[in-house]
Length: 409
Image 1 (cartoon, rainbow, N blue to C red):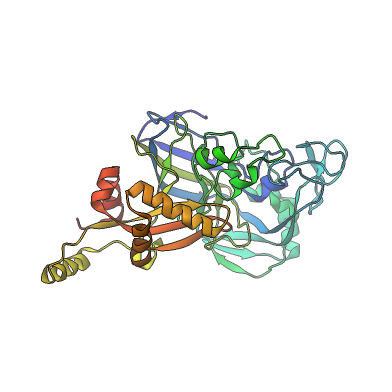
Image 2: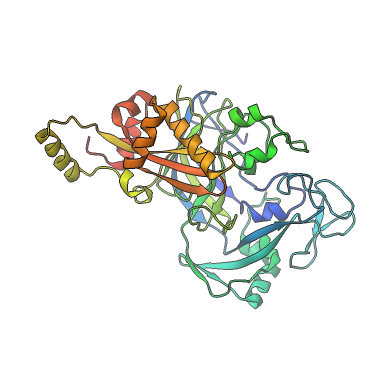
């Protein structure tokens, strides 16, 4: 780990574009590039760490992304992880960059194009005052020729920014910049690439034909779902992450300039960014996966917190009808799995285990006080529900939820 921060301290992460650049860089052993993890004072396996996102600042001047297609012969089992030169067969070959375009990254040993991915439909965006504009082929080529300048990658980054491809299949498109963190959490208790620290991508590692293979038991018990791609993990949110190794190892990366629910293209506009978080330890809160307190405006309608004037009306009507109502707070449980259905089921099970409820009760509460939202295809979901304050008090997070949402009780 990079070092240790005090319980209650602040971390500033300087991160490179998370996804496409590492994907096309043949000597990076994974599909992402994230900041080194930081140990948190007093955190032990079986605790949890509260991570409050204070600020995300986009540094890149441009970004590129699109739909991918793996290159035959350029990997063993998994093109994100076990990269191989299709020319000489060297695993994780050293490379050189010659010119621009999708053939630019070449094996230093034999000269063959060595990127294990091609972008079959993609775009180049430039950023200006909170907006993103997709450019034409001429401007995309100019950006590609100055890819390091426009990507603004940190000094220690090892990737070739994908801006070098110069893709321009969507000229004239305009989007809003709304940055969020694709990777934020704690390190898993098994040695895997960070891009696969999630219930969907992690399944690719079970009995895989390369050095990062894990067992089904390790998959089920050791991952921390740090790779979420949930667009509500942005400024003003709180992530409560499980601790599965002593120190926790809080890490961040894969900041996106914007992303709709599902990340349906498989990728979005990855950027260099500076992210500031504060961290604190929750002793003895054993979690199977992350909990999220998103910004209020990101909550689904039925899960939104009760406002003071609204609660006064509710309390009056309840007394009139002889009903004792339960003060509650919104909570999102992250579910993950190989598919969306399996991820939702895992989210319901995690909620039941954490909150001490029958599974059927969770299903009812989610149905009438929450929702299931897609974080990422194929298998990350947010299970939202209103949770009784008395249960949150037993978990030690009631004050956190009440303060975060300004609840009237």
